[in-house]
Length: 458
Image (tube, rainbow, N blue to C red):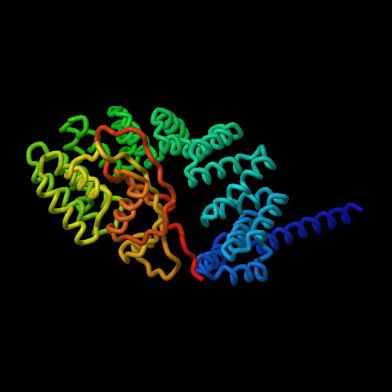
């Protein structure tokens, strides 16, 4: 009898071992899933959504983890939407929400990543109700609301996530970013510090805290944050650069000189070294500072960094206007219009040179939907790789002075046309601002959903 029992138990253990071996073999690995899935996403985004739907229906592997299956279902919802089969897309979303929470949340995240925010928001709101004890629905719904510009609502859901899981670092970080977007700098400062208490080795968010502290004009706290980032990662150019800029604003020439020396040693070809050198020498030689800033523009342009290119142009023109180098500014502005390299700082400087129009105009914010057409801009968005997909686009936000909404739209559209980056697809929003700022601003710019597909082909 004892022998039979032992043989039976041994047989059971062997069967269990074989089952686990089969299960581990049968489940598709992460790399295998990505190899199968990513080409489907690319094809769907390039106008082949109908064929991708058929392939999903016919050949989705059975051996998928729930999270990966959710991504596939999210892609299916997007494909149905892109094929103008809205009722089917909504039906699939409702079906997912009635079944596995993990699959549903993963599908919602995938819809968000693919730009279908309406479905992402709908799925994640439903899952907040169905799965109230999980941190994932409110956390990811907050991220979706961020992308939609609804930062106050996003903060509510990040706080909800934190009530479920106190100390959730992702929720702490995204909450801080939303406070910053709302320009609630005191709250942003506290929120970033809460996040950094949980993740003290995050170099980039120490830099983010430093920027917030600098905007609050708490320059000592800003320097401390940048210095913490530099100690964590001595090669972080952004930390050294912002440290130097803050030192310049404080008038601390020794600290500024130290930051310039570090960048000279670490990154002499980076545009931020030239910009810091410009700040360092501006009081003694504004002309030389201008030359350094122009070098920074060329350095940023060479590496196709649009953000640093625009920042460098802004610094150069501000140096020129601060030091009454109106002729140099005018020549640069004219050349920019001739070459098509018109960025918002150029338009701002042009208006400042002409003088304010506060007696006849007021301030308007215009949000334009733009499709990228310039080859260099496309190369910058795609990392220089060949691209034959649908139109890449972004939302451009202009702040302009105008006498009416119609004129504001014309000015913003003309400004965007003259950048040479792309084609204005439409106007998203025009907002009028009562009152006048002390120093009229020509244009302010920021991009949202950079690389978002506006068109998906036929």
